[in-house]
Image (cartoon, rainbow, N blue to C red; front, side, top):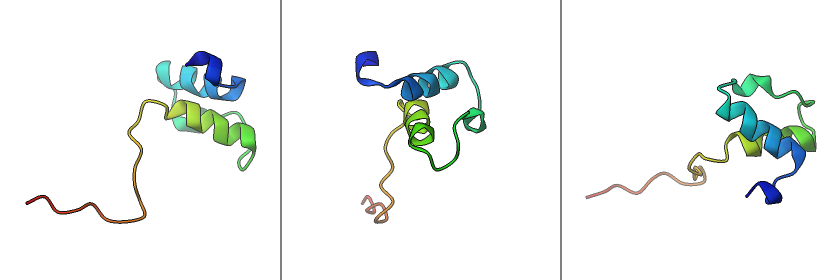
Length: 58
C-alpha cells in the first residue's frame, strides 16, 4: 500500500501511527497536500456515509 501513497499521505499515516493529533497536519489548510496528509491519517478508519441516515435495524 505504501507504493500507492504520495509523501504527504505517508506522512499522515506515520503521524497517526505515532499517536500525533490530527492538528499536527503541517500543510496549509485547503491545499492538496493537506488533504492528502489527512487521507493518510484516516487510512484505517471506516468510511462514513453522511448523505443519508443509517437504516433502522429491526
